[in-house]
Length: 424
Image (cartoon, rainbow, N blue to C red; front, side, top):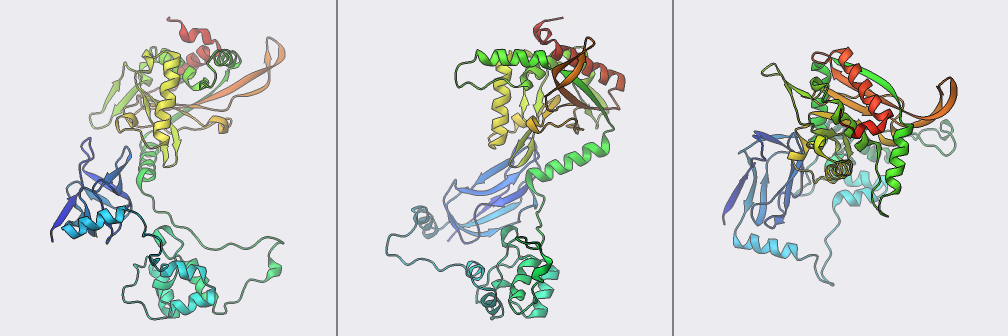
């Protein structure tokens, strides 16, 4: 018998530690080489780490939310011939017809039984090898006082964690008084219980970065009303000439194209603040971050050298990096290095927003919903398509006058869209 110790790998870009997001296997499992072992998070993305060997898992170090240093012991495998053979057999699938089915897990049985049966099971002595119980100290104390074996209580929390409501549900079967039916509205039932969600992975990174941005950056917000009637006419015209089935243009590539022209006159807005060196770094290239909502939270994939792309190429690249972020396929390089960020709530755009700066950048532009409404044009009331731009600037380095002037210049380009394609 031999053992293989797997240590936390270097996931790139000088990473010194990574966070465990979720284990894809557990102690006792027989696993093949390159099968998913664990999901780990860096500041840029969640990475699926495969098993380096075939064998049986005998130890896993750390749980979801734990930060583990690069080079620290992560997992231990038993890699003898029998374990490796078991890995191959385990991968072959379920037993053939006629083979005995495994017994249901105690938690599943308890979950499907009536409350009285669950209480009876919970007061029985623990089995020889009880499952690992996850519960708060208060829940454990309550169970001890009531003579309840938590190993037999089904948990509804993350990873099977036993919540207080789970214990109360078992105790309720012992004759706890029910709430008076008359106190509830017809067809409605009172709800109880809480849900605890550990802040890990991308959500933890988002929380840390947003807190740091609001704590360290004095935000100056500026909102401007844009008449996008002509821009909508251009967009509709362009879409009418696209091949059947092709993705249509949205406002976003037109906005980004205009932004790249405007930033030539406002380089202080296309910059990073290097806090360690106390230096403003102005960029000639415009690498536009596109804030994208994903199942894992908000990510900002980057369209590089937006200033050099045609409108069609710009639209295609925005779609590509956004989809890569949503599907979890964006690379670390695609999720970093933006010089200015654009964020849009799409159809949920509302009237105004207060976007948070994506540090170390110094500016962010928010796109709100475009709606038709009556406005006064040349002394007469007319129906126009109106959209607000909500922007935030780092007031330490972008003066309010310059911020307003930049948005006004962007407004002029968008209200007269031919100027987006004309060099000054």
